[in-house]
Length: 300
Ligand code: HEM
View 1 (cartoon, rainbow, N blue to C red):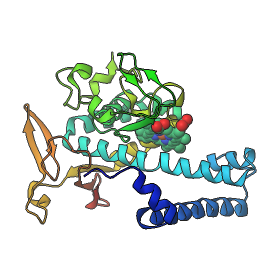
View 2: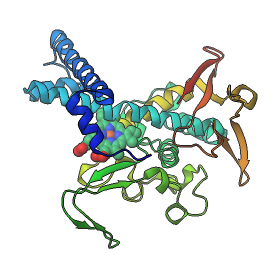
View 3: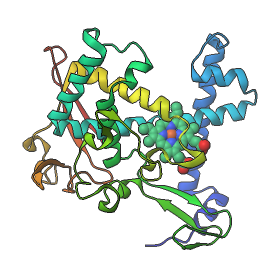
């Protein structure tokens, strides 16, 4: 059913229904951001080097600071969580990739197990390849829309009128044969390696962080954050997806692994091979040295 776009305007004017709820939610988020600022002021920020302290040293408009905090929370929290979810889902299904990541970590980082800094993280070529490949199949931002400011023409000749909503779809693009070849549905970190060295694709072929001048501002932070987390989890735990019997939902639908094109892929709840847009899976982290066995995570 199509709802007229003016419905929300009426609701907003009358402050009812979903618009009332939205107003209340925005107020709560703003309160949270202001509380973050207040607490940082209390503990002091002038001698600190974290992102928030740096912004607070430069930005004196309270509302602008609040908006910066909100946009960083929104842009940087769920995206990182989604990237990790997709990654562990695929690695849980590809023990060979897991083993290769660990081999590389021992080779590059050595027995100390903790990277000495950013430079060493960048030397983990296979790990970066495995992450980029997982975000190709499970992009944290699966689709992204823009509204056209003026009449325009796309490079393929499509005429776009002012005000039109234009959406690009990294989830679909990541699974297109024309872009990634006949093995586009397979999880292959090697796709991103040339003679063992990780290389980045053109951001318009792989718009996971968007492209052009409005590319994700937090891309580098995100990559460091995600690779550090992956490394520390995999060094301590083995990821196991739950067996088919464990994954019977109350409506009787099953999830688990199945063979597609000769390859083991995961069939999440609802039965869409290789993950639907909102797939759900369950996994276990098994301690490598026997400690912390059986930590369970379920994610949506
Ligand atoms: C895997 C993780 C991430 C992915 C896939 C991702 C993806 C994106 C995408 C697609 C955009 C463009 C949105 C648009 O303009 O329509 C964007 C913008 C942005 N991202 Fe990220 N992001 C990630 C992590 C982060 C983190 C950790 C931060 C902050 C610490 C961050 C901060 C931002 C900001 C501030 C923008 C707005 C940039 C601008 O409008 O000029 N992102 N991101």
